[in-house]
Length: 97
Image 1 (spheres, helix red, strand yellow):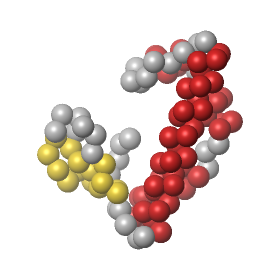
Image 2 (cartoon, one colour; image 1 turned 30 degrees about the vertical axis):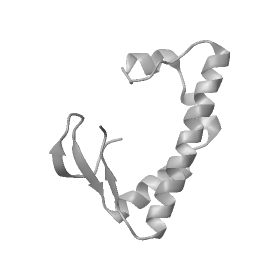
Image 3 (cartoon, rainbow, N blue to C red; image 1 turned 180 degrees about the vertical axis):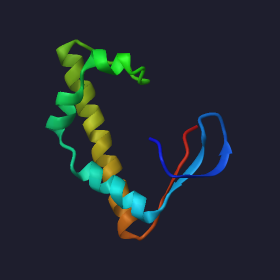
Image 4 (tube, helix red, strand yellow; image 1 turned 120 degrees about the vertical axis):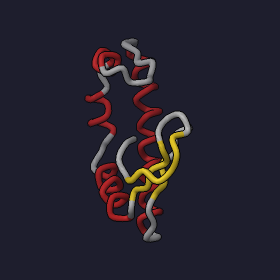
């Protein structure tokens, strides 16, 4: 995840960043517009590997389906987190370590 205002030191994976409430709302809106079908269609193992995304994409249909389902679960959890934060009128700190 990228974006936001850098507000802290780089601890190895980039500095801590702040998404102000308005930007957090934009992310929540984006996540709300996603669907399992869109994610399933976008999950192309060769394209994921070509983009050098840190993920072990699979062409095996059973494993691929499991991965898409796991990713979709994460997207739903992330959306719920953003929605709760936005309803409270807060921003979000992003720190990857």
